Length: 435
Image (cartoon, rainbow, N blue to C red; front, side, top):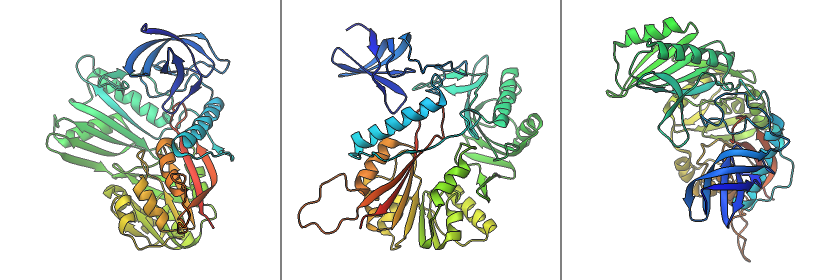
């Protein structure tokens, strides 16, 4: 078969690609739309699966638009800039339904409630690599590559984050960024007024005080700076050590190594949707982070238990609980280990795991706690499908004589478009214990 193909795109699949068939092979091509005819070049073969690069759109779909970023289709960070925001949301809902059905046996025909906001300028956190050699420049790693693409614009960044990037890029290209810096991670507060940086060096080229002065002099809004000398595994901190985010009337300290939701426009809506009408005697927050859900739930329940393996986040949570004047039972350990041994019997559980999801065994342990309600926030529909199959018992058919199962029914499904222009899907699923 020739390396060049003419394809009719059938649908989009999770991961950003379009799906087509050619000569008995399944072909995946990025940056396309359903119904389009395209030319593509095969770059990878694996039995009957082919991955191809887009060469030309022969017959474009009516929904195809003009990307906002000159680096689109090059840097790999965005996948859908050729699609309008409304159409992205519609396609993501289709992909979510198909993934849950195909991988989890969960045919959800109910509504998927949409939560969307501004499609650009939404990110409050970003990570840039430093290209060595000459000319030096900041950029993003190319997909599946160690090569760094220098960039001049990234329209998904918040205004302060975008402005900070431009100043850092100027420093890099002019040679004033201290070398050998390898990577810079930046994040801003909820008001987009203050910034914090994590800067990794292979080794410190100068005393930490001189490095600190260089960054503070260049960036007036820099509030906190964490420097890492990888060779000595040494950290140097200057400034507050954290930024403050506000959501739903609560304040959250978020330190340099803690996780917080990156979409600054949808944080309040997400918080409200998760905790709305939740109240009772005992709640459990798994993968609790800095206490984004824990703190409001502490106001609505007699007791709240939080679990997170990140020590920095756990310390932030404890500080945030003190600031809010609430009491929390906090466990600094992996949620999977906690679920194996806990004797707690919560009425309400919220979990926000990483892309790997909860895991089938941990999902089984969670169901055995028999909470009245579970709210599962997922950033990966594939692992969500696997876990929901366990929680809803879609993974197996009950046999005659089986004891009553720990089975849950899905009552609500929400899609939060936390990552516009990308294939990423954030799903909130509310489950209730079956009678």
